[in-house]
Image 1 (cartoon, helix red, strand yellow):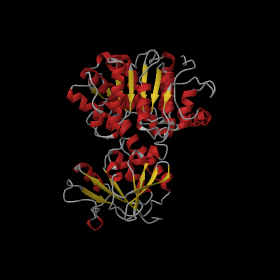
Image 2 (cartoon, helix red, strand yellow):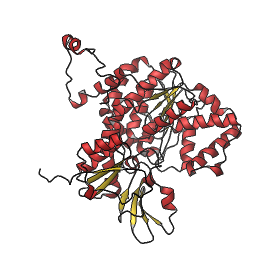
Image 3 (cartoon, chains in turn purple, yellow):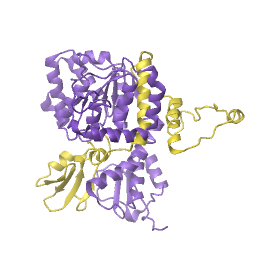
Image 4 (cartoon, one colour):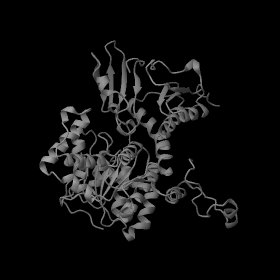
Length: 339
Length: 147
């Protein structure tokens, strides 16, 4: 196994945070037995030797353990976050420095991520993660939400059309940013994304939204390489989406506002795996929880899970006559303590 | 949002910021944005009442905290690494379509996380497996099973 020799390109907020990041990565490794077992089992045979992986996934401490597992199995890796706010700067710094590097001698993985990116910076980071120093691209994508996959596919479509869509006509600020990136890359190299796409053997996609995009491309016949839907592994969506949100929803609200949840009325829009975890999270703190749903199966699950139907407390103030039909279930009042 | 109670907290835990109408909120005549701290904003309507929007409408668990804990992400990411190994070794055998990992690998991911919690897994005897008509080493459920 080799590490990139400095200087190599990367961009993080502050390499001085690497020591703190490394300590938290060490704690996380103990709590990530699946990844550590893969390192122990497959590390000696280097099954990812020769792979060049571009990752677009929240640059957190946990993702650092994922990245270093891919490296331990022989892959070369470049990384960007998949959200402008989700990077933990100490984790990004530790990944760039690497387990054997120092802040003044980084020897880790090229990572392009910091907390609080602008949209322009975000897409610049994604573009950097897709651009290897030798001018080539990745052989594999590891995506969360499908932004790396989207940039490659829209890049190929732009090059086929011979012109980029007009940023002025974009439906959102973010779409305008993507169009400007493609306008520029088309001018620099009119075959760049076609070449990158040609080298990609496949993508693994982390989340519901990204998987939805992939199935749409499959239906349209525009998918340029095979895709593995990781989201719908049972050990992903029935764990991460459910128990993960049960943990981190309340954590996010508490750190942001420090508002007491007990006794408050909480409205959870959607009762899929994520919604189920959010409801458990809020009810665990004693909130009165209302679920809104368009899917009759999930609505029935909400009602049958003890989110009892209660017309007197029905949440309806936001529903107008033009809204689609919406099932609403509310929980019974919070249990008394001690029970 | 204009009809929500004063200081109602509005947040999104979905992947993209397309679940809360931030553009509509920003375009509300007379609205004022007061940043409490990074990723926490109070939006004050002209009548003086406000809503608190977390992480600018983007996923609040990662914007305002540190996302999911390591243990559950280990299960997700073990799937990711297995998918990457599969694609690297065998992509030529796949069409340009969307696939899921096999149930055998799914069960393997779960197995790798049991010891850490001190879980002892019961094992079928050959006679029990034969009686039930399922393999002794799995997979234990049909693909249609929803857990």
